[in-house]
Image (cartoon, rainbow, N blue to C red):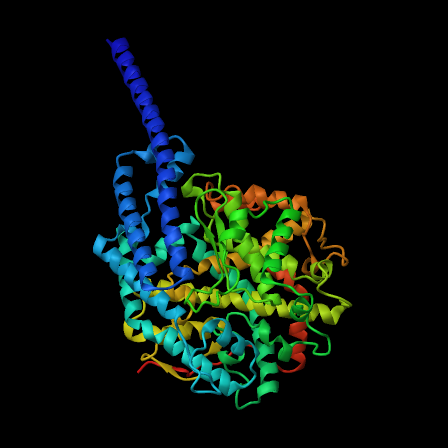
Length: 617
């Protein structure tokens, strides 16, 4: 009897095992076909989004929203189909990963009417941002100045605090305050969608992309490590701005008035380096004039970017890129979103950039950043649709920035003939590291607050009546900056940043600015361009142009797409599995030493007192 029972049990086990194998075979075929269908539909959706972003009008908006609604409806049907599979028990890690990633619907989880409402709200905010126009400070009858390029040019170059204050207020009133109602509805729909995806809030939905429950704590810890350097930079900049503008404009111990920092959002301060450079008699590297003198065009900037990637044995830009991209702002009067962006159309080799490129050094670096996205698209385009994205959102942003770090070195600018007769002594080196810190170190607290603020709103941690002052409180706490004029709850300033108006998660940029230095340091060592024990090969003058070894490391990582968790992708690049602030600290160590000595010598106040520039009542 026992033998019979054992035999029956064994038969059942075998039958179940065979059934499981059969289910997995069916699931494999299903997921393969599904990936192809989603790619086809997403291609149509992306084409409609491209048409709208490059020519904002009612018809393109209608078509974009219509196609997005169709894709959302399809994805909702897919989510029901997926539940028919017991995918959590599949033996294949790859198959389980694809099913898990496809089970997250995002906004498509909303009802049809709510999803349509979401699309309408997003169109309202994005089109408002793109259509902001302000009057000229010096000519009240000229009221056609747009953010890019006119207002940004003024914010970057003007040193008149009243003029800067005027443009700041005009822009924030129109780009932010105007969409307060729409933003409230957006937060409501974001929360609903998150809960329908089984997350407690939109914050958790965003953070899930990083596949690490400790990501917030990790970033807080890394930022705490870097904060002392930031405070030294901040103190020195405030000290120099007081010398330039006087005590009436800049206080000795308070937050820095942000309109003086050369950027509408005070996210990077390098454009005011001409008035705060540590060694003013040493010329800062700015090859813009040389680019113009040599007849650089927007096209040539992208061709040089393409050449950099090819020099590392990476993929050449396909013909579709050159045929379909928008690299110069159209002069036909249309409204478009000028914010530089890279696009994947989920076919083979259909990749594009939309950028209102100007012939400047800063834009030259932006070109390389955007081409980093394109290279990532090309390296993982062989994968199923669901894996055609970065290992985490920060990886995508970091790739191009590694190239930008290399391109911005004196060594590379000399190589391409843009920098001549440059003497890189200790003073020149500190100038360049300081210039880099005004972009890289200054950006870290800004990036963190963009999402810390939205997480708080998504989690319901801030009353609506305090939404605006909560934003400025975070900006003050982390960045030590304040608005140039008193703001109140009648204002609403966060959506004056494009990514807030466009529902773009910002943590990716913070992660990027940390891990890009990990990538860069490793790539420099592979290229034989950095040796910590050799003063002739410093990290801050490393050029990885032409290094097949560095190129292969990039291939190893980029070709994985999202098929593995990000620690696996990082390990494929350099053998590490954790994010760390050590490489960025190593890069800026000479500057840290100099700043601490200089600030101490000049009795510079480190830190800042409370701001009184936002009034809740």
